[in-house]
Length: 301
Image (cartoon, rainbow, N blue to C red):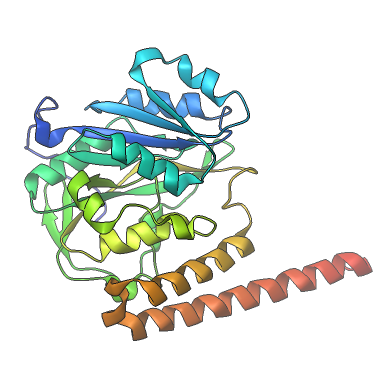
C-alpha cells in the first residue's frame, strides 16, 4: 500500500488561512496519567491548531486539574459520561475549524503531523480525509513495524503526490481485511464529518472508531501520508490490551456496519468474506487460550 519514505512538499502552509484551520478534539475519561503528555504533543505542532478542545467525559480522577494547568491553550468542556463517540461529537459540534483532528487522551503526535497532512490536503484540494501511518508504543518501546506495513498487497491504488498519495479507487470491500486508521490519526473536513454523521454512538461499546473510518474511507478520494506521525499507546488500562476481546468487538462492529450502513451494501459479499475470516480468528484464539488455561490448571508446560 505504501511507498517507503516521503518527499518534502513545495506547498507552503499558511496557518492563518481559514482553509488550513484545524480544531483538535480529545475525549478524556480518567486519563490523568497520560493527558499532559498528549496535550504537549499537540501544542508542539509545527502548524499549530486553531483550537484545542478537550471533552471531559465524566472523569472521576484528577484529569480536569491536569488539563486546567494548560490554561487558555485548551478549551475544556465537561459532560456526563457517555463514551468516547459522544464526547468526540460534542467537541466537533463546538469546533470552528475547517478541519477536525481527533486524538485519544493517551496517544502522541509527532510535531509535523498536522503540517504534513495539510500539505497533502493543499496539493490535492478535492480530498476530504487524510490519514497517516502510525506505530504502537508499549512502556516506552516502539513496535518494530508500523501499522501500514501490514496492509495487504494491492490494498489500494496510490496516486503519488509530493506530500503523500491520494486514493481515488474505492477500497470499501477490502476494509474487513485491513483497517488503515485509528482514532488519533485522521484529519477530516468538518463539513464532510457532518455529512457522514460523525461518530456512531450506537457502536460505542465495540470498536467504535471503526464505523467512522469505514464511512470516511468509503468515500473517495482521500489522502495518505505514508509516514509514522502518531504513537498509538498500549497499556494495561487500554481497551486494546485484551486481543480476544478486541477481536470479538471487531466482529460485532462489522456486523453492525454490514447490517446498517448503505455504503456497505454494494460490497456486502466481500465484506462478509472478511467477516468470516475474522470469526475464524476469534474461534482459533479462544481455543488457544482454553488450551493454555488447561495446561496451567494441570501443571503442564
